[in-house]
Image (cartoon, rainbow, N blue to C red; front, side, top):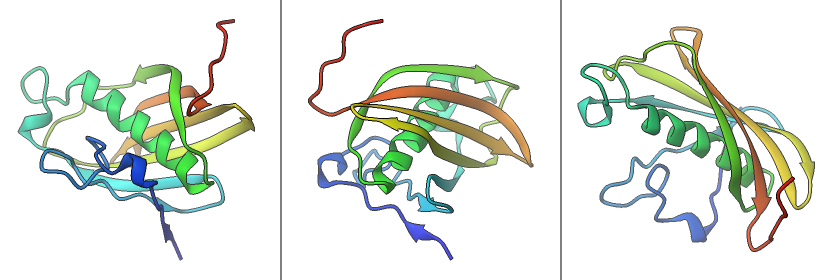
Length: 140
């Protein structure tokens, strides 16, 4: 059984998971204590080069999955830094599964990972450090 991730009201207007006029309204479900997922059917509005998803859109999807993994464990945090790997081009007209998981929690920092999966293959992945909202962390 999966549990729907409850996002905080401070996130209601999110471009990806918000229920706004231009938002995608992504709804994540927890599949374990630290992992969430959702399915997305992309369309031509999400493309960069003709026929493939825009890299910035893919980065936003990964960021959203990571953020929702943190929401599931009750943490509101913002992205401090993020690394993304594009494994292959992703056609805009396909169904993809978006997975996010919390790796470590050392408040105020949290390490999180995400994957975009198409036909059972990881087509993009990312990792990020998030910082609890309102905190200032000095650069390393």
